[in-house]
Length: 526
Image (cartoon, rainbow, N blue to C red):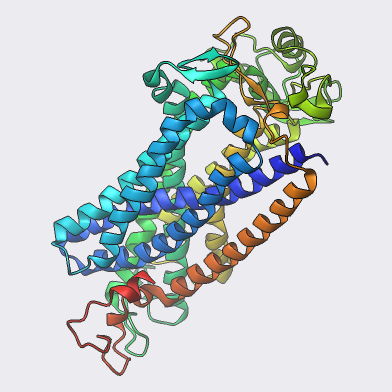
């Protein structure tokens, strides 16, 4: 393997891992802010408990997200210096603004929220959390502006072989970025909704298993208490049933939003990156039918071995143009068009190294795009369906005592994560062989695009990239174990893990060494 392939593996691994934290941070932070707002308005203790418990899990995930995200910046200079040189004049503004928000606004106000319990006025304390959450959302927007420019470059002119920004407004209002932002936020809320649902189901199941809650003849919950187990009172039940139902509703609404934004995104892709969508459908020939299932060698260049087993006539045209008759160009039609526009062979230039003069394969890896597209939709649909079933099953106030069903609910939390990861893999790998995809509306020799083959750092050897790949993957694996252990510990601990003052079984009555007036913020934070 060459340095290029290894560098792509490295970027893919660390990016997908980091993006497991990002949607949960954005979605869960938003829900925690809403819960604290409800507590401030109603004064109900269960909302305070919900804020503290979910807030603690949010903090654990936030810290891991920061730790894994920093490496992303290093990779640009370490393994992708040619790419950084090419896009630097454009990426400077959005990435600088993202860094200011992420490392100043988010961190500062989140710190005030952590240590401001009972120190700041209630409304000021809540405002700190909202500012931090909004900061993370706006931070995500600036990242998506940069990424969307790679998908659809706008607002630039080519000057001495490099794109330079001439219209910042066009860059920041790129229609690709607008749709991607909407899609990302709804995906983040779907993750957070599923997270609340799965963990709350587990906690309600534990109460049923321990005999704290029972059901009457009509199947309605009879909420109980356990003096022997700290925090397992009636308000504890209210925390979990409300969290579960809030999570289920959020997950269903988020899926609906994702479907709308996904449809808009798909229509843009048909227009801006037709090869990506043709590969996503294994559409080898022009037509109107959507492939539900295709079999064969979907990795072949000419698609000669691909056979559509099940199709929906007209659906592909509807996804692209909102009608059922317009033919969509297939791979075999698009390849000659791409070769005519962007060349059949890589330029004979030293920047391409040994790859100079090689024939360009404009067809992305079809198994990745085809199944990635379907996994994104499938996982999202499964999560929404599970949320609907959960609302139905828990309408009488609790969950069944079935252990397999509880385990299924916990595993189901992974579905929205899978949908998000599959969507990003599809989006990024479907752009190949370009790292900056060409804008079809631009024409002539100044057309803005960059081949991935020319983006890797020329002075980095395969061995060096292998070393960093192994090192980073190992570190990330350790961080994954740490996060899972921490989350598991505090999830099993329940609300008491975030509110030790509820533990009346402690010798100090749950108030800590300083007495009842002590604000144990460190216990909450760490």
